[in-house]
Image (spheres, rainbow, N blue to C red):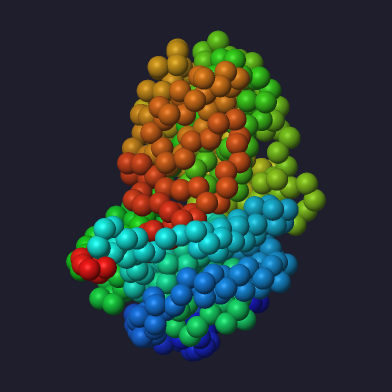
Length: 475
């Protein structure tokens, strides 16, 4: 058992006020493999006070000093590579190869991107005889999800540190150990006391008092729309700034000139990646009517090649879902798809053959899906693809945008002019053409109910800043 039952407050590991703990479940086995502290409002208050006591000093540190701090963090992060990979594999159930090449690497990329952004980021600008200053907003509360234990956590922390804002972090209680390692990394990297504070616990005990605390100036949250709405409501009482990255139901538009085999491979990867537990998952696959039969055959072929199983076994591409609750949710959506008349083309309910422990599911494909169906409109957060046919390009774009979400979109084909037209037409914060890989300094965030604000690189730093005009400064 891994026991991390202390909180990291003001540069020290201290006992949690409640004395209670939460079991952490390994989703591969369904059994507890560790414990964390179950924090409460008293822990939150101590952490916020620690951050508040240093926020003016940290705000006023030179950008070069914060850059040097981020550089030390990058070095120590690399030194803890194996520990991070092991923790993510155990707590998330991520295949160990993905834990290294995706989860570990994304966290590293964000710290490096924020560090590099400080080389050119302008915190002051002269306008005539006046000065415009961008300064750190103050204490920031960060609440991060379980599906990417290093990615969302690192991008928020890196941006806050670069801006000069001290933080209180509440990671998901389902994947907390990567955050514990981050605290150890920051300690080793000489992050000043009070600048980083970690309070483990659940939403009621830690998330709510953090969102309500009067000395917290900003809340940055990644997770469900329902929780984001509650955080926004609590933060509105004293007009905290709020940055939200919420859900998605992202379309993948496959054009009629696409290579069907390659398009099918892309579609499958957009669904099975991280067991479908990705807010940007391309789960609505839009294809021309004329391509339907050939495409579905290719998709089934690719799905059959996806090895589901123990994340520590060689060749495993898809591990378990995070929890029994998430397993039940995905099963309910699969059943709902059948009830509403979609054709269950591949996969289906229950666990894959031979997987009687843990929270494993079958990668599933529905065809004959109407875009109004529940499985096409609601975020499932599991490996479930809805294949929807379209008549022409205008129809495809209309279907793609017929959703309350707008986090991501994908388009795949050959003609660049058409690809560009479609990419510009999709209402989403990020649109990807033909599996293009983006840098960690590109802005990330959503339209509509997918959130408020932008993260990553210099755009992420901006979220943690206030803008001040000083008139007559150069008079």
